[in-house]
Length: 195
Image 1 (tube, helix red, strand yellow):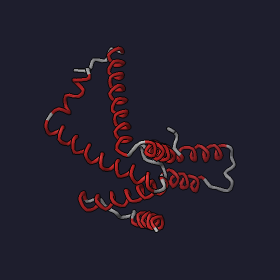
Image 2 (spheres, rainbow, N blue to C red; image 1 turned 60 degrees about the horizontal axis):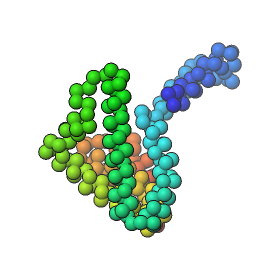
Image 3 (tube, rainbow, N blue to C red; image 1 turned 120 degrees about the vertical axis):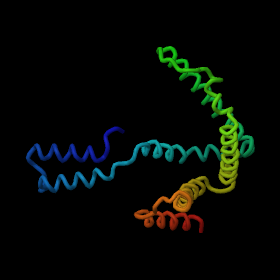
Image 4 (spheres, rainbow, N blue to C red; image 1 turned 90 degrees about the vertical axis):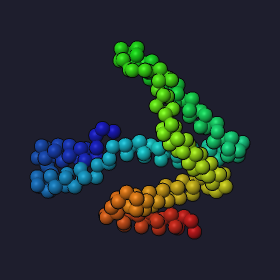
């Protein structure tokens, strides 16, 4: 995914120019076209977000099936416990591979890695994030168990964009110029879904 759409288009234009056949496009027009296409380059991490959306498109159905077999709270607890164990084991394995490769890390043990989270201010913030995340995930899982997962996903993503844009504008001074049309389109889509 390192080659962007703009780079592919440029290589195509360059190869056709080199072959002496531009299909009626002059060099200056081809350069202008390439500049326009290059502006469509996705930001870093966009491919991961698209992958995330693809994964969510079917994992919601797994969530709904698992909640139907147990309960929302039990499923949430098990999934978070599994995630914590996976992260701790992955972090420990990464520390061991770094020390095996001869990379010296100050305090690479598991307790040394967890030490910053034991400071009172950091621990309080982490606890607050856990409470908010718990409420968020439990309410989402409950919604998935009551209505269509597709509906939950669409409203969550569309509503999330609208709320984050609004809060970003109010509390952080982020401008909405150039994005109003897109936000209104999303709002219209979410409204139609809710009807």
